[in-house]
Image (cartoon, rainbow, N blue to C red):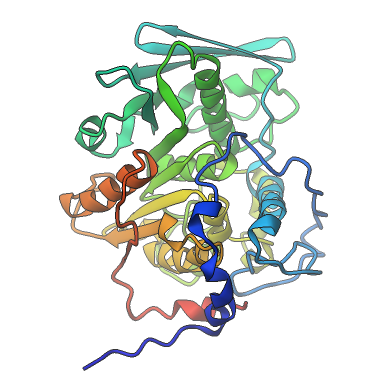
Length: 399
């Protein structure tokens, strides 16, 4: 029997756009933020924000006055979403400081960032493959490849750079007393998920400064982490357009999972139950009014577009809210599809393994993304694996 597939109406409307030539859509950018010249959206107080029970339309302007699905318009629409996430959820990410130095010290990259008369020093461990390079590189959160299997990176000649997030902000921050606060004493409302991505961006600045001495291909950088580090990787990839490939492993609530959908599930990480040291305290105002949040985390994932994103889930841990991740991923995927590069976003959700322990059955999916987006090889990156066939994700789309 031949199966019949019925496309959702919103996707049918976008079909003419899906013919955009993928080769004309950049894989990565050479600046941290390409939307610096875009107008900033107005940020209404919660009393003015409309209640939206479905997932907000990624392509509709913040003021609701327009909707544009073109790649050219995405640059400034992306900047609007980024501004909203910083304003309502994690705090303002400081720009690149005027004073930053870097040097290679054996197997360590040392970076000094100076602002407001204070200096913050970062030390990142380096592991280089044999040969002359330049090599693609992965920034691993906590460990050299995060918690992903190191051998998959080593056998591909991918350099490893370890990000020690504690050098910027502790896992459980004390507001106003973290290393980054010495540089930005007026931003004590800053959540960890803007501070840590700031640190990863400064690490990339350091790689740029030492590129004559360190054979790293700056156009092929990846970032990865798991659990709270999976959230961190996702925010880092969303906030810095110099990252070609983002791999978020088991990011849970506050990561890829949509806050609105998580509210309808069981014992999961909802907006009201997350760790607020990772976010702005002011986000609590949405705890009982999640439908007033002017964005959701399908749009956080979409900020990575048109660059590559791979997300792994783990259904054995209810707290991760992987059904909400699935719904969110389906919504986010529509952005990549609309931009003509649907095969640059993939998600793989399964169970039967420990937390942050990628089972071998998921290794081929990771390998495909490494091969294509870090090595430039042909690989099948159409990945959408999940156990949620009975979940009606389309009911969450009001667009």
